[in-house]
Image 1 (tube, rainbow, N blue to C red):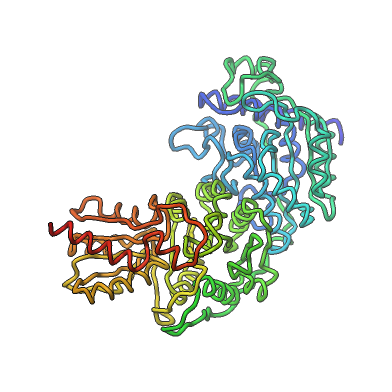
Image 2 (tube, helix red, strand yellow):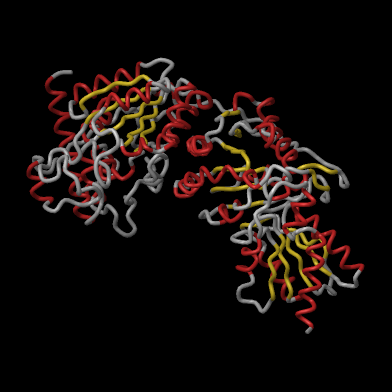
Length: 615
């Protein structure tokens, strides 16, 4: 590297520092010291190694840059200004009401792939993007991830390191900003670069230890990473938090605070600069990925009266959807035989991804894949999605379109016991912003909803049942999201039973028994738990004034609470039947009976409710 290049890079790093200080000062908040430590790292990347068409952020050949340490957003926004993507005026709107420059980056900016700020999230998403580039897009773009040293305490980071090493993702580079100081004090390993290198190297990564403030060393390391074969690269850079500003450099107590004297800091850094970097665009020859188009969707069909598990129907429908739509991919957490994604794996192995028992990495990879236009279905036991719930939350903040499928839900799984039972999932996924929650009761409904999910935006969740259940709907029937089905209903109804999934069959059996008792009970299959078909339920409640909800789920946050929300302003009595006692091992029938959600319990609850209403 010639002297002129070094001088330019040093000046660019100084500009990034000054603009990071200015943005945080204008906002009165932010993380300038975390930004100052990585200025040289990002200056060299931006000016010499990143291949990105700033005017066309949707270019499929663009590299991807993820700030896993999203709190260093002032540095990221300073880079955008240097690249000509935003103006200085917009830079100074950082953290203001209505600004695109939020406290942590989000895809409100077209150059941002995913929202970051939840530490330990960015690198796993980077692994997903690198997998996409190599196995799906088959494009030579690179994925660069800026990581903080504090976040290396997160388990999700090590799921990412292991999976990337296992896959040999040479198109992935993690740049670890080892500035020694976290939020409350020193990090676990401080400036012991060898400690970080030994751990990361053990997962099959190529590691390079450098001075993170030396542009020459940085340039060499980034070039070396781009030349790596069959291994991802981690550049482990020793830096100083608050570098360049003597009042805060390598000092505790200044994390997440604007500088007390920004003008003095700017003077110390050499005043405001207005340098513009022409970021090198990607090679034109690599622009267009090949996408298999597929043919018409021909989903499975099941005859009424048959007995089929909804998880089986999901697996068959996903396989058929994969044949019809070449952008559908499936991700598994080592339970494909149970969730039934193994059918997709057999038919479309090039679009099936095994993540073993690493649910955080699995969900993060799906978020990365959808960013490139792929349609991911992520399947595991409903209970095990709780491990990745923060990443589901971050998916919503990232405006990501991901489809999650949880099997083995509720006590109905039988003898496996409560550690395997998803009993919180409806509540958890209902709470996600903009989410869709679906719970089919039979095979044809499950198949139809599986196909419908491909076109749902945001986070969508399908709950499937382990055990076989009766087929009650005809093949080819449509089940719109936000809809429901009235399975029993007449003008003589005195009570409305609202159920979903396995409890629909219990509700039908209870309604038949109640008819023998001279009691007319309506039954609604609320297969769309969110958005709920409030209009149909309100109409029924207005007629009967008595409503019973039945769900194989804890009483908090599930179907019952969704119905209560819909009826909050109505004069209707609602009784929730749900799992209220910690289950043990038992048969399905015993579990439903012990939980008080089987047909006998529903029948008894209706009689009790009527007795109170008429007393």
